Amino acid sequence: MSAFRFTTAGESHGPGLVAIVEGLPAGLELDRAALDRDMARRQLGHGRGGRMKIESDTVEIRAGVRHGRTLGSPVAVLVANRDYANWEERMSPWPVDAEIEPVHLPRPGHADLVGMQKYGHEDGRNVLERASARETAARVAAGSIARAFLTAVGASVHSHVIQIGSVSAPEAGEVGPDDFAGVDEDPVRTLDPGASAAMVEEIDRLRKANESLGGSFEVRAYGLVPGLGSHISWEDRLDGRLAQAVTSIQSVKGVSIGEAWDVAGRPGSEAHDEIFWSEERGYHRESNHAGGLEGGMTNGQPLLVRAAIKPISTLTKPLRSVDTETKEPAQALRERTDSTVVPAAAVVAEAMVCLTLAKAYREKFGGDSMEDVHAAIEAYKRRIDWRG
Ligand code: EPS
Image (cartoon, rainbow, N blue to C red):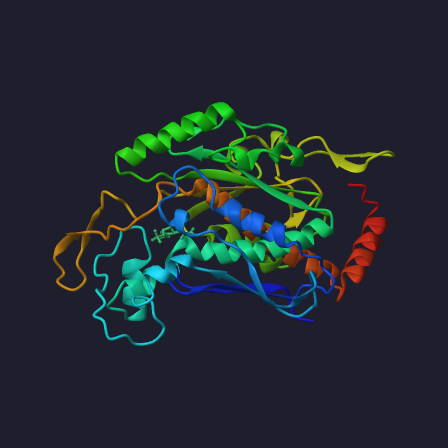
């Protein structure tokens, strides 16, 4: 049986994006509408640019699924780039007769300059097309398949925006899975209506000033069994794996788990989650400072992951750069762009968390069919007397 893993291929204005997900059990039911719903959720959010009016992303399954169920073979999906119709010559896989204008104006904060140096490209487009966050559409397609697996084993993954630019939502406090029911209807996917209005204003104000905005968001996962990940080896620790998965999202610069930065300043007696046991609930906690992870393993509490994302590095008021051809000072490339992608990035992070958790479940419980998976999880829950 292959280990659970996924990969993506595709350029922003090329023919399309591809994702391959390996290591799923057979018999996992997939819902076409649920996959497309996740694709549409990634396109939401006040502050997106013109490209989102062109794209209307859907998942085309090319392999590994028959009559709505996985076969146990690699699942291959395709997300078409509708915009390719406008880029066919510039992005053709094969040589073209037309003279194609190369990109010589690297954007500070983007992969452009280093990518050109590293790969020996004279045209920055050979870098920026792949570095573009358009690639996250393929991650969300793969993540939505991982989400179907998690749903089948009783877990759910949600997200909400905490901050856009200088506007922060008040601390949400106790938030359960049902509290996310309306979050996609909010224009910035935040849980606080007052903060939402202020965030929209902030985006509009800065967009007029030709600025882009960053922010932060939180992903929460519920219904996880204790013991996903492991304390045994550094690379098995789930906190490190989640941090890698989430910081790999374009423009994400920081990740924290639980009350990380706050806990750093507290005395130990206020930093940890005391352990209780009762006949009715078995082991349980009254707090969740740890964000659901202890010793690199889930502990059965909700998983809380936060991330900070920098403002988009394509600016309509470009920063100073250098023409890589002439080495003369120049303004960075100015392209159509979004003002902010914080709401979308939160959905991408859900996908990365789903993929990381699905992998951890596959490692812990194995199984070639969903029936095997369910039997292994039930046996484990019985052994540890887990009631969650
Ligand atoms: C992106 C630039 C914009 C975004 C794109 C990411 O694309 P374009 O250059 O075509 O206007 O819209 O994001 C997507 C296309 C998407 O689907 O999220 C970038 O440079 O990262």
